[in-house]
Length: 498
Image (tube, rainbow, N blue to C red; front, side, top):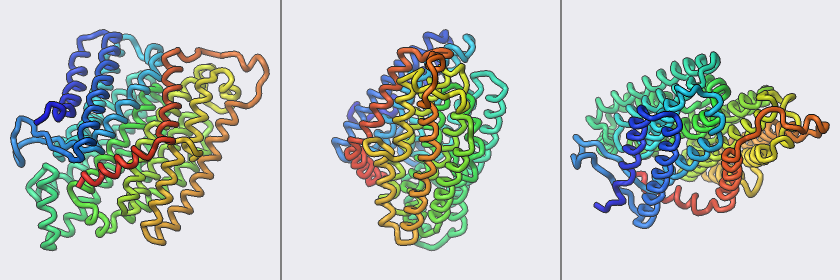
């Protein structure tokens, strides 16, 4: 085994070890340790991506060198390594983009706890990306949930406690349904490692036995992970969760946490159940319909909002609907489009929440549209970052969101006439609705105001935060302009997935 093959395991252990060490560190030292750790994980993940892209093959890493079915494994391919790189970049920029808010809004005694939770969150995200063991996935789902809840309430406000309780209740329901599904899967296959479980399921499907239990398992897994990722009908926890915590937490929760559950769902579809079985069970039809409804209803709810953060939170419901719509197309091209949108939404949504914090800071900390008039003049970099992210969400050329919508439209052409018509109509309507609420906000922050209103009312973002916003704009444009290598990596990674 080559040393580079140890990198994914080292990344997970490094994240968890940083959380342990941070318990005895003051907040400032914990911050530097977290930034250094994420940077190291990013470098190791980039090395892993270069290695698997060069070999063109995935590989498994056995914990303690114990083979299946006794040992635990992680599995590494282009898709997993690419997601790890993107997740690390987003987390790093989100931390830098809201670093001054952490200093102001979190009590000194809780600052090291904040970075401990971020360390644990990154460890759980990496584990969900790489794990080849279903029960390990469940364990890190719970770690992910606990860390996310801690990040919500670390600000210590009444609204954040309510949000955390709502999030915890919904997440526990989702986790419980997922665990029941795993228990049933173990009962009929005798395996928790993904590869042996898939081999056992292939025999069961060929024999035509356990048809009803298998459908129940798939439904439980989809609903469980759908609740945790914010699929429409199960999205009610999203507005408060993203709307009231610190900007860094809002950026990370909206861009990374929910996407990790969707990525795990795709992994189970391809690596355990088999995507053909998902299609034949007609479960993709339900996913497709819920995705389409989410695209419309999330945007409608966003239009009704007068609070910019809650509006942006509701737009996440619509964007998650895009991802589920892509999966629901029931084609490899649709899943590639969904995976690309996971990246796009992760980059753009973090950019939106960080830039909103800058706009609010120069508007006496207020978030309603009336108070935000002229905010783009008071903080130029935040206005530019919000405008760029809004144009990306609308689907303007040269931004990542344009490529994403193009992929959805083109992949729908391979999914049959019924899905094609429905997808194109909803894509068009959703784009119009996106334009309504995002461009309304852009117009608001650039509404001409008198000289007094152009003056900063509040605190300007720090130089670090401004640099993070500029980097986010650049990243969004780079992904939009140089999307071809990313799409090819997603296609080759998905081919390795099975």
